[in-house]
Length: 266
Image 1: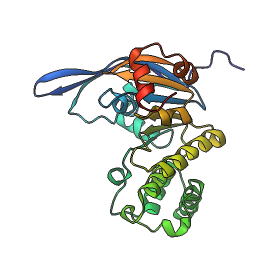
Image 2: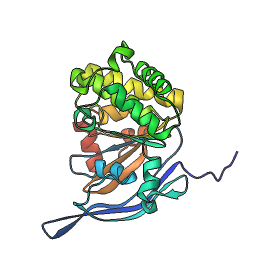
Image 3: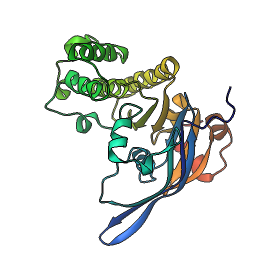
């Protein structure tokens, strides 16, 4: 065993600035954390705390503008993603680190079938023919619990329910067996029953695939179901972090105590 093995992902002193109407604002301030293989990190905080910007920074998904500056290090297997070219990042996005967006209707292409979109992802990153890509896409839809997967391959996003669309997004994210899933509030738009099913799916993926997950949400009740570690953001800064059980049992910050009280923690 290599006791000196580096974390799968390490974010060091991440700073992000936005510029609007000539004014520069610090959005993230000195964000640092690590993610190990097979681990789930939950990121929580109120709206505007910097949760989504943190995960978007990992794959350079923040549009310019408003982005005006970014500094620090984001090390994926010792490669600094902030110093990667767009070509290098494209080879990593989807294949090694996949992003699951909050609202599938805006993330999925409305003029392509679900099957075509999953197959396109597979064929972009793997040397495989259309038939093999089709079979793999069907298997992925089945894995995420979509019934009649061959039939659903032909459906367009608007023909699926919200829960089905989110499952299709997860299937697409899993298509190249990434080591890390970045899940940006993937259960927010779902009803309670479907939300529970999607959370169970994430737990199964972690157990069966050993996938590492960064799960962003405003809901500590959701985080309690899935995370190993918790990071609490406020106004672009980490105010508390550590093992989930430890923070739930003994939060050190008043803001964290308020979140646990307001958002369904115990």
